[in-house]
Image 1 (cartoon, one colour):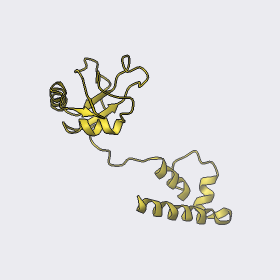
Image 2: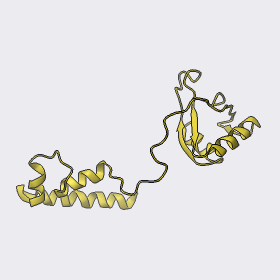
Image 3: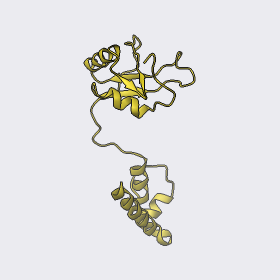
Image 4: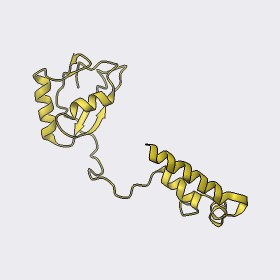
Length: 142
């Protein structure tokens, strides 16, 4: 993106507008203080989507926050994505925490993990069960 992007344009607005042309892998807003040195850029999953977006931009058909976007195809290439396929068994910090609270793997817990697994320590297991119940309620609300 070489022009027409205001400092109030959010990444989500830019991404949503660019997704009209195809799946967007990355939408980076650059340095808002110095957009000439580090401009915003978008990486599409398919080269055809990038070509379609550039065609529309050159025809002045892409307007964001009341400004006509200007762009050119970049010759710089960032690192490739590790995989375009979704991960089947992604484990986040929440899952790791719950595993430790139940006494399952995760390591690094010291003596606290076996005590929680045995339910010892005057209600350690109960606290974990309560915490899980709270988190399950939160999960349902989302």
